Length: 460
Ligand code: AMP
Ligand code: GLY
Image (cartoon, rainbow, N blue to C red):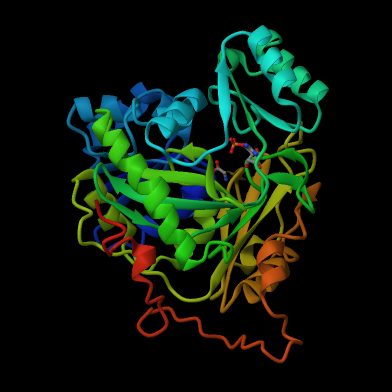
């Protein structure tokens, strides 16, 4: 089959890497791709938001399946436009993507379908929002309604920070049209985690839970970024909690979207806060997470392309997702200055050391210049390592990261710290960190039907 992957970040490299392993794949294209993707796919000089250009290419080449990585083309209706001309495409329609593209829609949807989330109000004027802030008191979270590249959320510790955030979003239009409406919501305390599921409109299959690190600095300080690292599985999500999330979040969301006439197909990403009162949804995304995907897909034993085709055909019922044992950790190497301004064009050294048996380098912001590979974005590389447990995967990822260098490189040193805090250390007599990784998945794969959503909990 001929496959086109739309996007050019670390998530898309992981998607191309996994799809290339399917025996069904004959040719893979990526638009626009990056220097790492270029080693396994033909990269096209088409932007991921140029829907007309992508459509023309897919028609001319008779592409069998287009897989959409980022949210912007989904928000622009790429899926509707491809389906209109009979092209198969993996991702939600524009109406279904509202779960991510409008926070006001997502919040109201959650209330309609009794999905646990923070208390909130939506405002289309700064004045109303300000009054509500005074009435509620701090801390509060102020969010631009629309897409703002992960920057439109401001956690306000004081009333005056909340008032400033409202001023920036609504009056100064810091995020353009995304701030025409503003959501003011209750601040939730707890640990965050991401639970992603494949959804075919009716049936969902839950993926292995993961955790992202959104802040730029160690200890979860500093401004939000696209994500500075991720790992899976996230031990904060126990099997019992995962079942609860399936019952209270995923099932009503999938059913609700179908009932409202905008069935969701693709990846539904629930960003959750695990609070003392149970899991609550912080946000929905309508696509694979970045960098969560770089940690999740290396653990997936099954053929991703087959699963994606099942999603497009409404045929997920009865399928399983099987996960290898152990853990995967992705440490993002970023350009110094990110998420504010940063330089591009630094030469990256040390790439020839990889891949190894345990380490895969997923490229994000890179481009080839003759024989050299240069930095070309804020997030540059995702160093992803596998291990028998999170501790081993973390140590492998950091050892690998030390072999790579470029001017101004920056990375967090504490990726997966929450999981490590829960795991016994090798000095602890209860530690059993033997290397149980397998490539064939025959014996050591997770016997976790509940993770596959394959039992009664996972199927609608
Ligand atoms: P979002 O784009 O909505 O996921 O928000 C970005 C980040 O802001 C989240 O990952 C959380 O760390 C934080 N955040 C958003 N909403 C809340 C909330 N209600 N309470 C606490 N933190 C939040
Ligand atoms: N890692 C967060 C996201 O993909 O939105």
